[in-house]
Length: 262
Length: 245
Image 1 (cartoon, rainbow over the protein chains, first blue to last red):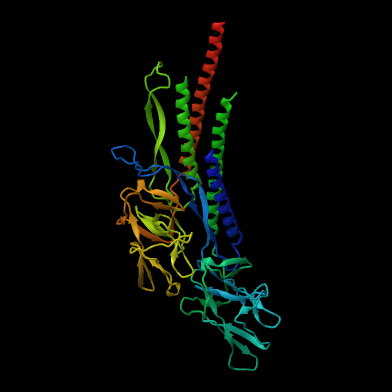
Image 2 (image 1 turned 90 degrees about the vertical axis):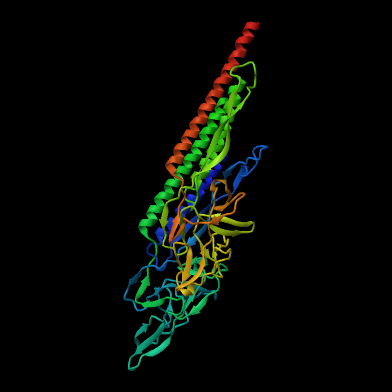
């Protein structure tokens, strides 16, 4: 009974769909999180009668043929890199990117990771670091005597040092951008790494060509929309249920067949 | 008696295949741009297995073709600039290793070189049959209703939108792709592209589930007829044997 296998592919697809949606909902309050979406494709078709096959000696052809599909598969789980809303926090170390680009983070293993989550803080030595203590690249050191520091929209960091009238330049925060940001690989902890699909990182100053601007004292909230996720969850759950009914119906057909035998 | 068994067998075979098609529709209830299908039946009139019996001809059933429902699927807003939905009867042109294929699934992505691809990394082609390359540093790509993509005020390319005179004769090759048979596509005239939306599957789950119940019951009644014919036969053998002795 192939219909049962076909319905099983449908159930598997919907199961993955529910998994992706539940991960989105779980990250409703994760800073810089980008929602994901499962995309499906139909499987190959078996041609029982090929369209266009000759049906008589007079040259008439079968207009459609009989093609029976084998079900569904997951094409990809796509990360939607839509801008998340900016939320004001009044924390001097919080940074949000409005537009394209990623912060560069030095990982302990030497690799560079990328993130949209700009809820940074200071290390014991005054560097700007992520929540996990990884240093934000290029390294910015806030001196000990700094009363306040500011980060401009284009990424310039300046500090006001006690006893000095002019603000002191501390450096420039740069952003990395990718041709295909959806191709970045998620590592967890809000971090992403470069892959062959994303293309190499292009580093530039914020507000430069193709890059967004920085907003100090803001963080970018998750771009998950709770209402649409819940709706999608209900649809996925019902679709799962209906595919299970198809398996039931296929089972019943087999059962009636087996009941003829005595 | 042989006739009733053979006729119900032909109907069981047809119903089983109809069930497979319905199951495939149901499995693709969330596949973007999927078009639902139904199997059509025709009677096949043949002479009965045993010619002494009446009627002189019997009708078997055969599934002779598939009917596709080309009604548009529901459009869903995604706000993703690389999602495109089509209205009208056009198709996007996709490059495959075996020539061009066509799809209604407009959930596209960019590859590492900025070329527009489907989610299984096949190139989306423009109206000149060329690969479309976008440069996201030039700003968000904007898609006009006629399929013209522009970035930063400059026109980049125009999507190759194609329509077919006989869409029902197209071959489905999986991965949401279609290929025409004995036909060249023409530029689609009544098709519009909507950016930030996707076309869902046009499978109506309720209808499909009703059909599945119907198939299941029809299969059951065909099986019941077989059982009755079988009972009749075994009773006949029993009775005849009694007369002989």
